[in-house]
Image (tube, rainbow, N blue to C red; front, side, top):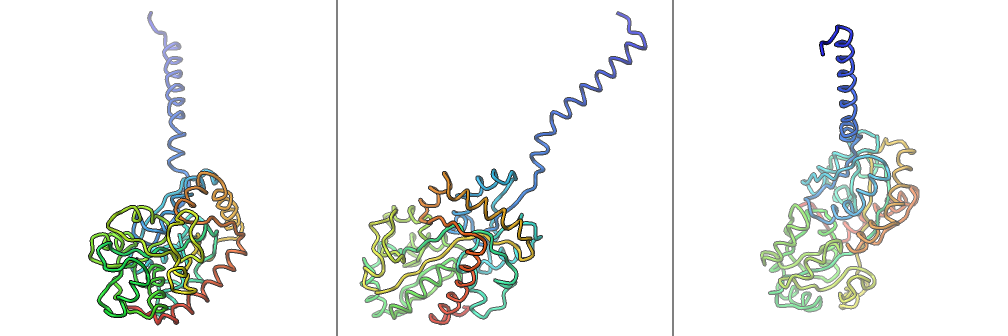
Length: 329
């Protein structure tokens, strides 16, 4: 059929309309990819203890917020590089730091950090708390805490232990243990807990204290010997592990919190919204079970309650650093 000018124009108009509709149909995926992206910064190597609680809850957190969130690792300088990144981020609640008790240690050591651990941050939510487990290479001549102490006293600085870096919670916990037990063991700092533990597996280091988060993979390895847990009482998930108190080191315990921090100027309404969402997520499945399986007991704190814990821990860490005589190496 021969097209008249009027019919041809009509068909062209219909084609343009159809093309526009098809283009609009593609917009949802484009919009989805351009949603606001938030990120949780882990200031240590991937696979370490700080990353585990973040991965346990960030997807459910993103769903509740209706946003895309990712996890970024920025290792180096004992956590100072990643921590500094958050301190200098925009105060919009889209860049959060996965922090722990060791957040205060750099300042307590008297070093000049890239940030102020209090003035540059606003507490957002306390995810939970955990204790630590002392691991040794299975080829070492000691099978319990008492034997380790006796051996170290007879052979000062012959043994060495790994940590996630100078001033990390794994460093502080082990230094505190050595101070309390009256022994001297050489410290070898690594970029992360996993690297330190891997060298114990390989026999290049003899001991390491690792967080209960993720300790299961090491406990199951025949190259590792599990000596004690730093909790006040035995773990519900790992009841076979003796406490240090039960092992003869009376009244020794060491615990840490995991929490999210934002840059200091973040408006309170944003902090309150994040706090409410995170508390909701960690109280429900599957995040709750993920945290418990990692040895982390979920918390449920308001901004004010977490801020109180935050400030109290600053005082505790400062005292502990002085007690063990910890200095930058």
